[in-house]
Image (cartoon, rainbow, N blue to C red; front, side):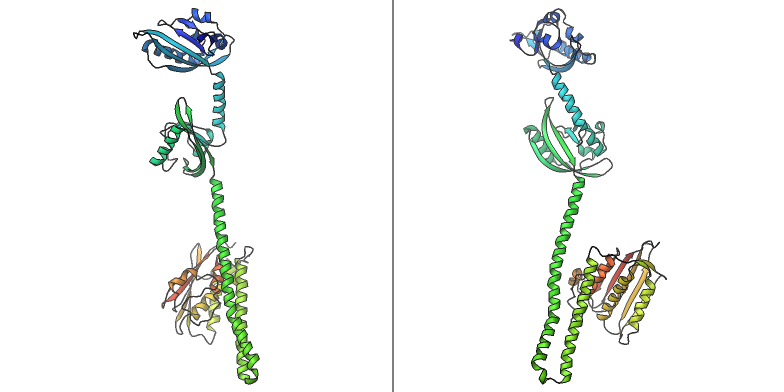
Length: 478
């Protein structure tokens, strides 16, 4: 049978001399059966110089240790024609029935094409654009390509023989995950793409999509994991999710806005309709004073609707993406003093306005009209919801980075339940009673401050008063 086998078979005696060599030796090595039979060292002599020491050690193990297990060794030979061929060599000790060692049987297979393919795969592995790693059942790195080295900042030398957890590349590997991977290696399963979070040597977080499948390499189960960096994709997805959420919130706000606006307009319209019907039906029974009273009611409601429409248009303009502020050099201290003086000149004022500034001048680069509107609105609200005789404190102070303006009153305060929605259009606190208002002023103020990159906050206690605080970044004015 050995004469017709494709592989190069041979039998050696205890002394190492050939007792038999199959004809395939000539096809593989270029040397004849006769040449091998007369020269027991021919195989060693035609072995590539770099592999001779390894083959000699292999022969020594068989000859002098007489192991019962087959030994395998891959090496290169130089054929009679000068070509290099890869040989997969396997030999098995042979014993007689009474246990006497008779020699060994050798089998040599030409694996040159396989080795060439492995070399091509090796080149593809290490030069693949995506990171690829190979690890064993203990989750230790056995190999990693250049892309993985570049991504993590670790060299192959630093990786091989260690786990990702030891190196801090993975933040956690629980027992269940390790057992899961080992089970996959045993069963040879291919894992559907999964997402993985790694940390590079420099501490950068990297989000990856990984594909894992098992390979039997040199008789050992290995996990081959190919990865793709999806950090940018994840960031884009996060932005899209945030945008969609904001869009949903905006749609909800618009729906609520339309609903509330319709309600707000319905009340004055209803008053106008009823008053007009009364005038039409009972005008002849009314004297001039009663007619004038009805007309005054209609005019008041029309004026109220006009204010709401103007405020709505202003708010819509501020909230539009195309809104552009008109910044100019502006002394906020001078503006605050002027607005406070205007209120103080009102003969009907029944409050004390106290203005304090810790710096003069307070030069800022802002849209002066929006700033004046905001301060006027905050002072008007403080007066509106405070009892006569109380004090309204307006304070302006600065730091190197910001400007803070606060308006404090000793009025009715705002219930805690109303605070979260206080800056929503048309929202009015539940304790305002009959005090008139559109519920749009604070929404306008908030948007006016935010288009400048600032913030407006509120602190309040029912029955004690309220403080609104505006904070603006102090930008370079040059």
